[in-house]
Length: 325
Picture 1 (tube, rainbow, N blue to C red):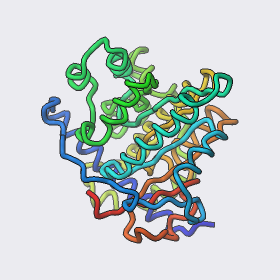
Picture 2: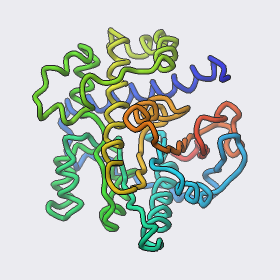
Picture 3: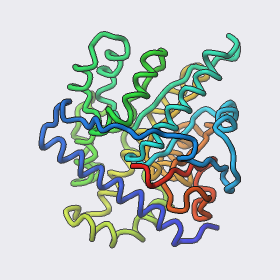
């Protein structure tokens, strides 16, 4: 059984990153950021020496092994730290290798359509995303209208561009941040006032609540979160907001599984997926027989060695060099 302190450490890191991103996006909205302000910081060159791949127990493995085992699953939950550009490099490699293996090079009877699902876009911009992928609008208008994250050009542009070039469907999976903020302020019941159209951009109401496991870990960390984010007055409501993120992304993935045998690769922060808490729990609620693979890509000070604290946080754990920023 995992120790409480180990769980608390992992969830604390995730919650703090989540809160920081929440705050950054709010500031972005306040400043009315436009595409020219998107970060175009250049990446350093990345090599195989910048990451190490392990299975759940910490034994070394390879990207090929990961891609081979995707054959057995419906959904790959690909966790990341949002500012880790080595993680984004690995994501791009996995997307390309999986598309080659299960679509481009597969026989017609064994082909599986690859679907890229992303936390980084909200469901209310799906039409804009589709229009860009289909060349109905150009990239300038896409960036102006789709509310991309500030690091989109550096970290996610290559993934979306590859999907566009290879006719891979991209799912805007997340709940709009304005509704996350509303829940954080007033609780989930505040969503009942939304129009019928707006309600299609979140998971069906009432949402399944956070698990007891999530609640326990969250309440253990309340003091730390309150100290770091004193502007959030009611932690119960923030837990509901966190849950709306998870349940909406899970519902978006679930809806895609209605189609013919896709392989859905979903990108999200590690705190939404690690140890099968968050999105995995809700996905099982929607699709009890779903087969999942959890991949955690984590910057870790023990690099290049495996940190025993990370054991079993995913089916595969990829450690990246924290010096690469």
